[in-house]
Length: 259
Image (cartoon, rainbow, N blue to C red; front, side, top):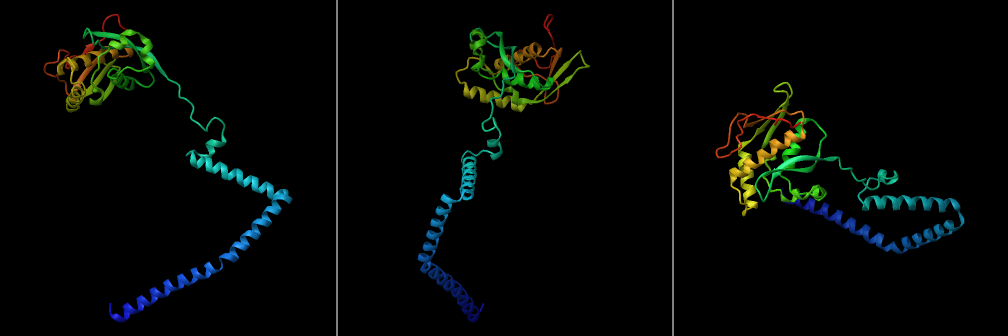
């Protein structure tokens, strides 16, 4: 870019800036005139508001619309929900869980105990088994405190439900076979997370794994009557965890008399 082109661009830019400031000064000089015009229009509107019913009706209607939109914006609500009765605020969702006999480990005796816990029994067998795997490791809930004093003696268990790769139910095998595939790496990670959060826990790692799967198997037989056998897989293959007294390479059958 040579000097002539630079001078032309600077001149064009200066012309734009000068025109902007000129228009601004002109409008500033006309502010008193605009103020008088606005005042005259406002006085005329007030006069019409007091003498013309149509103007009063339009003013009231637009005021209601403005207030309605303002409330919907401030409350972050859909305007349609504010117009329909009982939709302005969400209705409470009913608790569809039912008290079901599940199993856990007693903190005092270290033995398996049965307690009645709230469980959602809707869905297919695989979904219910997933819920059981999650519930038996959950801490006590307020609504479950009425189920008996045994509930307070439940010991904490790791969240091994995160280690479940897949659950599928085969009704044609062994009158109802439930297969649970476990991811070993996630299982080890959950053990480390559990003991880092419960440093003073009296059980060893193998004992806590044994307690969880013992509780899970007994709870499945108790809560899902369609299941007659439970089989565990580790990373898609039959296998076991060294040191665990509850072997995972064994196919477990429903105890006699439990239905």
